[in-house]
Image (cartoon, rainbow, N blue to C red; front, side, top):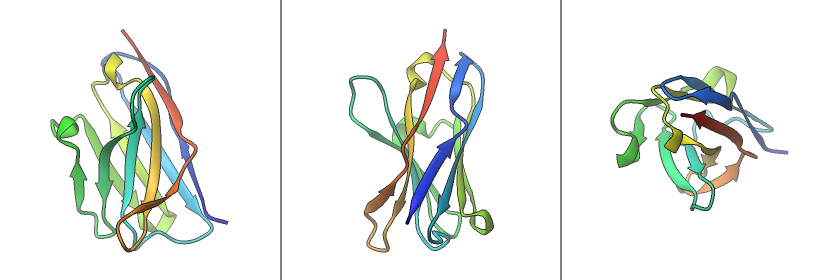
Length: 118
């Protein structure tokens, strides 16, 4: 059974940092693109960043200012999202996902809550 389990969320003050982790089990995703998404209260789920098996990363235009960094450790079947200079607007449930070879995100974690206080 394929599972993606996020961790690392929590409550942090504005300006603080968090590092989210997403551990995959049930199969290896070392050759799959992995992504992070987030969903704020009352809003649609939004793409944050993705990273290919090679380590090449892409970011949503909203996150290209360098506050967030995606990375992966293929040996550990884990993807990370380092989040710095957090703002209250970053409050959301953060989800990781794994894409199929066709590029569609078919596997999703249960999400981890990030709350940034002002």
